[in-house]
Length: 364
Image 1 (cartoon, rainbow, N blue to C red):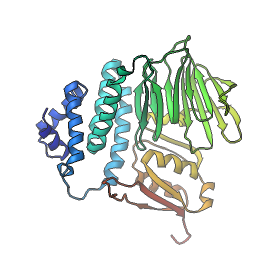
Image 2: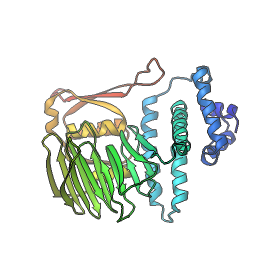
Image 3: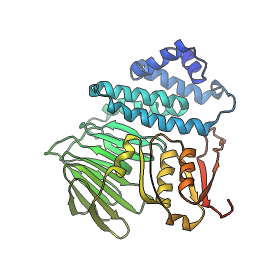
Image 4: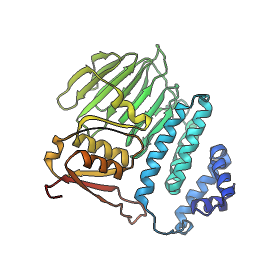
């Protein structure tokens, strides 16, 4: 692979044959030493000479970003439904390749992310026995699927962070979550798996559960699918207080400010459907829907009228774009909305899309 061919790819100038060669290289070679060196050099080249990235004709960025975000999510998740399931190693490689193929649409960010990942990962051995701590961030508009060192599989929802050691040492396997994650925990009765959030710990041995712990939310929700988990509160002094042990198909809600916990049996589908690329609402108030749509589509949604929160909505969205979702909501609730496009910033990046929702007037 040459830098010249990658430059052509970045600037959308490849022939079909060249495009195929580049994508195959990302799949098979980009993680090798020579591939890492080439990507690192490209990153430096772009930093020194921005003219390498050519200006193109005006593009409908909103439409492209909208479709990329959700088509990528659906494509990633649909691989799990193939009747003749591939072995885990091969499926993981395809997921990694598809993520890369989409990411190179925004190549400077992609190169920087690869550079940081490779520098941290391949340099981890330099610290001897000192644990190396990693953090994965799933941007708004994206779902990230990953395997932890112990074999635990994690889905990270939009705008979520997961911190974890590259090797689990000691008596527990502990990770730190900011946002929402679905965990398929590798069974190990001698080493409990702990998800640490801002105010709550979820401890498991081998199970499946979902935790939503966005810092800006008033509550932390946990949904248990299989096995058992114990919820524990950590006070300001770091002392742990066991709260309850959950059973499958239960939902718990821990209110951070009041330190109040409720638990009930619940249909879990609406709480875990996000990992399969589906947005499920069931009598949810509009303010909660707006919050989830904001994370899902990477937009800022503003409700101008307080009474809008009184309205509830029930629907399932799979691959609808944001304009389609808003149009369907307008049919079911008395709202109007206006979409403000992204604005290019001085550094070349784009601001978030903004949506303003208002009450529908009688004559509109």
